[in-house]
Length: 223
Image (cartoon, rainbow, N blue to C red):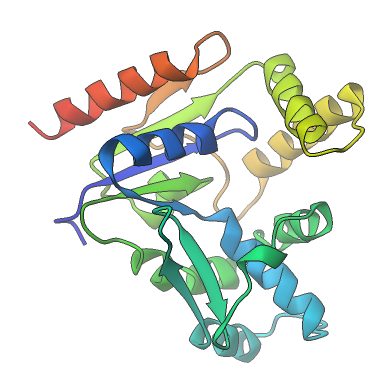
């Protein structure tokens, strides 16, 4: 695993992690792992299979029947029981359930093997909450994204507008603040910057500037 270049990108919600991850993938040709999709998958499976509580044997059975399959877009689709369930994972209800599931330490540990299996040439960009601290502690470059709460709320607001929703900016701001507190203060894999992580405040920086900075850091890490 160590022979394959790995860049981890952790940080606050709506701080630009996903956008930058995709841009880096386009520039470097690396695969992109969005770890949040795995917890969404568990939320979806819980719903369709009417699972009341995730017991160890249930989790093991799900893991054994789940795999990440590389897509032509250099990201990963989730296949469960031979069915591609990726298209069912991106709605607000699944997202809220996934947030609660991500606190389950047994599930987080069980998913490590699936995430490690995503490491392949020419490289991997791992996007999430604990990529640099727990999942890929030996990554050669670790980035931690932060941004002003007002900026993040506006970004999320604009995303929802584009998707056809009718959001309330104040509610979004409050929701992000609550999520920050939950993520940073949870007992299991709390959101924090790895010791070696480069902190990037994206509040006032545009995508091109951030991308250039990270590409420069990556080149230095390879020397």
